[in-house]
Length: 95
Picture 1 (tube, one colour):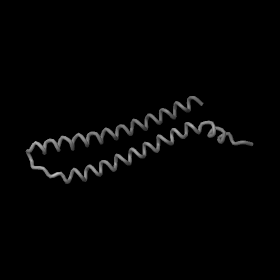
Picture 2 (tube, one colour):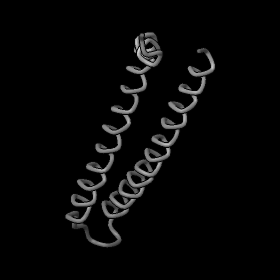
Picture 3 (cartoon, helix red, strand yellow):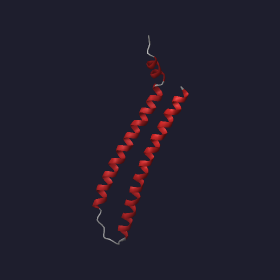
Picture 4 (cartoon, rainbow, N blue to C red):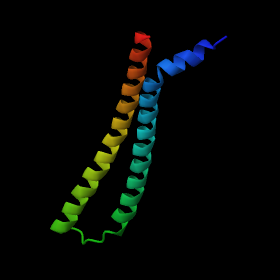
């Protein structure tokens, strides 16, 4: 007698691989984001500019924009998770 779960897994292995790829991609992006924030914060601490100069204001703008982009990247990760969840729910609706 064949296990019904084994036949289901054989039929939907393509979908499982897609979800697995999305999870691996999510983990890679999250780790890259964490490393990027760490490296940038270390580099940002070594910038030595005199107060009131044009270079100081430019560096401050770049630093602020970079931290803002890291915050948006975290939001993008949440959107990716939501898209994967919706994809799985839609896939279950088609079975």
